[in-house]
Amino acid sequence: MGGEKRRKLAASETPWDDVDAAELTPAQLLVRDSHRSIYSFRHEAHEGDVAFFNGYERESCPFCGGELVRFGHDRSGLQRYRCTSCRKTSTPVTGTIFEDRKLPLSAWADFLAQTFSYASMSLMTWEDRRSDTTIPYWMAKLFSVLEGVQDDVVLSGTVWLDETYVSEVAGELWHRPDGKLPRGLSRNKIRIAVGVDSGGRSIFVNEGKGITTTARTWAALGAKIEPGSHVIHDMETAHNKLVKELKLVSETHNGKALMGVPDKQNPLRPVNRMCFLLKEFLRSHSGFDREDLDGWLDVFFVTMNEPEDKLEKAAMVLDRAMRCPKTLRFREFYNVRPSSRGSD
Ligand SMILES: [Zn+2]
Image 1 (cartoon, rainbow, N blue to C red):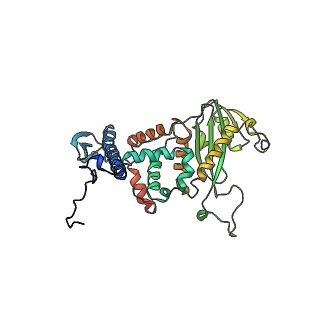
Image 2: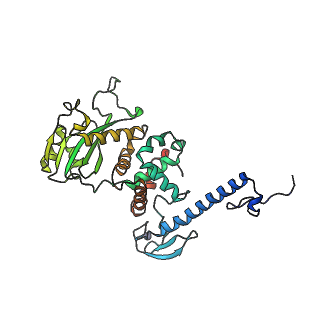
Image 3: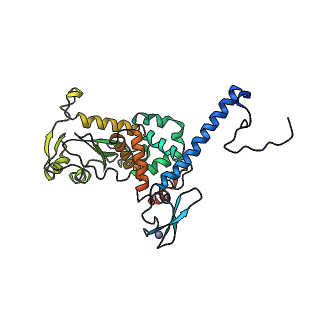
């Protein structure tokens, strides 16, 4: 073995770049070609990232909202802007969830497609990467991007309504003064209103802990159902105000009486099915922080609603992340929850 020290290869190089392919062993060929293809994939992905970011023109300063002027490009090729008020410079990435990214956006696109692919959700919990800090960190970023995604949804036509519950995690359970756990729909249960309509839309709203009230149900659903719709539901009295105020055509069924009825004949089937899928979804993330319930409900909302294809969903979310004006708040969110801090 020669004493001469070999020059360290650059990331793009292989030991066989100057060797004719005919002289290489099958194993060397395989390693060389796979390295080249991975390198070029990473490299192209990076160039694609710059084009993606520059495709979103900044309309105002992310620091003060002031007017911007173009100010050249940074070293990576990102458009730079300078604020005419506070003089600070920014790029399209400043203040978005991608500001501190270390991986190409293709990794994000992959994460999103996986998150919105219902079938893979339970798998994700078992995979090693679930315990990695990356996934919870990205998930928190995703929650901040999705915040408000259900705001403009109004169910119409025929609307099925029901509720489902999720329990507090073990460490957060409320105990009675005698140390025992309360029974029934106690404050250890969080109520989620579920609505489905004949147009295939669905909504999932956190109604808070314990038994709901008419006022809470009204706050959760009052703006989410078109007045005059035909509503099919159980005999939940908390819905009374919805029916009255929105002049809904109400069709009630006794949930208990329907228990033996075959699924296909059950008039509440569309919403029952959605409650079942939601429970399965939440179960596949069973240890999740209940403070993040709204975020998980938004993820489930995107999973169950249009656009249908998971790649379209990923594109929709990436677009929303760039247009979302409140992403600067994400940093504050992490400042108050340092224990949740991760890295990517
Ligand atoms: Zn400014």
